[in-house]
Length: 444
Image (cartoon, rainbow, N blue to C red; front, side, top):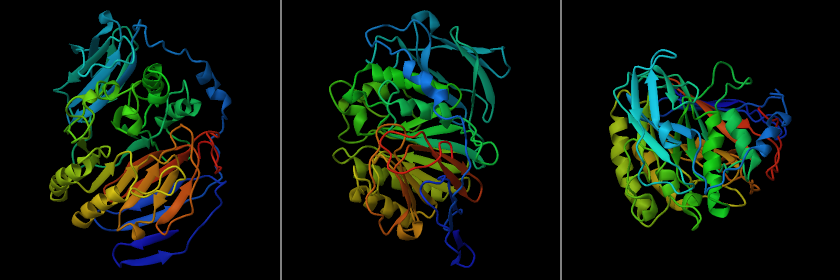
């Protein structure tokens, strides 16, 4: 275990290395402001269960994109503020009412969904969006959409408070084409038995390439938003866009921007017009952390993002309620995958921001269908994670770079805990297959 002593600024401890065919927990601790503690933990723990439990995913009904919805489905919600959330779903017009309240089975409020803009065209819909405001923070609500069963959502914890979990995944794919993408959805919202305590996430960051419908059919979009209902009924869905959200004439941004309402929504120069203005990137606070997404590399988009992110980070740096700044998006500043390497242009932008703001301690990218983590001593104190093993076909690994702390070609997703002084993360091993060249135990 190598770790950085924040008081003495000295490296202490001894390296602990292990084989890739063992479990792939990583633990990283990022101390508040400038100090970093990193550890790679290797375990032989088993989750058990195998893939037989998930075989039914291959038999799921595929949605014909020409058909209109006959029941409520594709339900998900986003955090839009301390006391507000937005729900999106597909349902016939008589199922467009959401009821909610603070007691099970008792709904003191209701709202009719409205047609979103832009309007998704992955199927005939109808699609609905309800922007709910006036909620109490850090409160569990019970809700019911149409005749669907009751579920729950929770508003954010107070600003400045800590000890919460979030999850991350990317390069996922609908289970109609990528079965492992569906398997990931059944696990990412659950408490993992190999992690001490309750690690169920409050929200899931998705770093782009959600459905790959641009290379398949529009029905893959609908299938993905039904896949994620394994967790998105109760856990907030906070995505960023990748290159496959607008990759062909089959699929475009209206199928994604039309399904979400983002807090602090921003327009990126050069972004495709199909999504309409806004929702190219955004930022939000949760507890003691500020999360800032970044857009795709449209002409002028990244330089515009850095200019605006400088202002957003400066406000966080001077805000005593914020201890950490985390960025996420699709492209990786650092990567050694056989499919995609480091994006040096983005790398320059994030290093510039890191040099100005000590609270900026983590970036989570994807694009390369691998898992990689940097040694922050080699990346200017920024822990750079590439997590692109959400379920689509995997890539091979290049030779480790000087900045590489760990790399793996296997399906995976992240569970990350934010405390008042540290960020602790676990890369959780997904199912075998998808072209993996590394091995690990499913669930470890």
